[in-house]
Every structure is written in C-alpha cells, then in structure tokens.
Image (cartoon, rainbow, N blue to C red):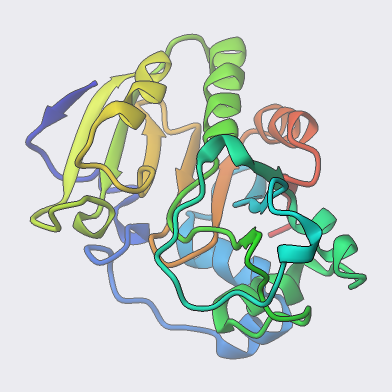
Length: 235
C-alpha cells in the first residue's frame, strides 16, 4: 500500500465521515429501523445486498470468577492473548438478554445497554475498529470472487494517531492486512472500495459496527464465513 495525494472518489465521497456532504436525517427511521437508517447514511443505494459487521465484545477469561467485579473507569490494557472474541448475539445470551439487532445498534449508539453494568473482564465493541478477523475474511472473499483488485483506503484524520489530516492509500487487496503494522493508523480504514466500484466497506469512527454493500454472492459469502459477526440486512 502506498500513500497517495488525491481526493476520495466522487461516487463514495458523500458517505465519508467529516468530508462527506451534509445529509438530512430521518430520525423516525433511526428509532424504528436503525440498521436500515445507518445503511442509508453510510452507503449508496446501488448494491444488490447489504450487511453489517458487528465489532466484537471481548472477554478476559484469565480473571478468576471471584475477582470479577463491576468495572471502574480505567486505562488498564489487557494483554491481547488473554482476550476472547464474543459476538453480539452470544454476549446477549451470556447476559440472559434477547438479542434484537436494531435495539442492540441503538443501545451501542446511546450507551443504554439493557444488560448489567460492564464487568472488569469485559471490553465492549470499539468504535471505528473493524475486527481484524472480519478484514482478513473480506480480503479472502474478494480474492476468491474478483481476484487481486486495486483498492483505495480512506482514513479520516480522526482514525489516525496524530489527528493531522485525512489519508488515502492505494494498492492491491492482498496488501490490506499490512496496514495493521503502520503505527500512525489507530483505527481501521474509514472507507475501503475497489476501482470497479462493485463493493464498499464503511467503518465510521463513531460507530461500533461497519456497513458493507456489494453483489449478492459477495455479501452472502461474508455472512456465511462470519456467522453472527457479519449479518445480512435488507435495505
């Protein structure tokens, strides 16, 4: 991947955070069908199918049961090897709560989770950070269906560590995982799209989920490989 000096492609620019065009919000739809609302807000309406990739919860299984208490505000960082990914559905099951996608999305937006207070062995989904496993799966599916496509990656400045300016990278889809090695990129790309415009991924820095649009075979394969992690959604 190489850093390039250019603007976002016009067809996707209206859906980019910060630099995107100001939109009118259907607040009634936001409350009634939040998944549809955020698809309309973040992706163009010209794809066959859509999906939402839910950023995982994380559980530290190495904390003994007798040491698990309500989590206090803390900058404590758990070693990555101590953490296990948990889907939104499984986390709700763990809390004995019925999982409803639209309600769970609004809970993540309003911080009004229906389950108990956060425990000290739990990490909630990170806003603006798509699961590495979902990104790797995306790369694998694109390679199988479309080959090693030329892609562009847009990072809003808020997704970088120095917060100085927006960044655009260009390269092949198989190079995407290497971006995890770049120190200045604290979140995953805000937008990922190929030259062919046949799919797009939008990870807003302020959302705990990622929206995806593309052909039916593309969305179906992603959902099949990431059960309960990437969920097909009607638009």
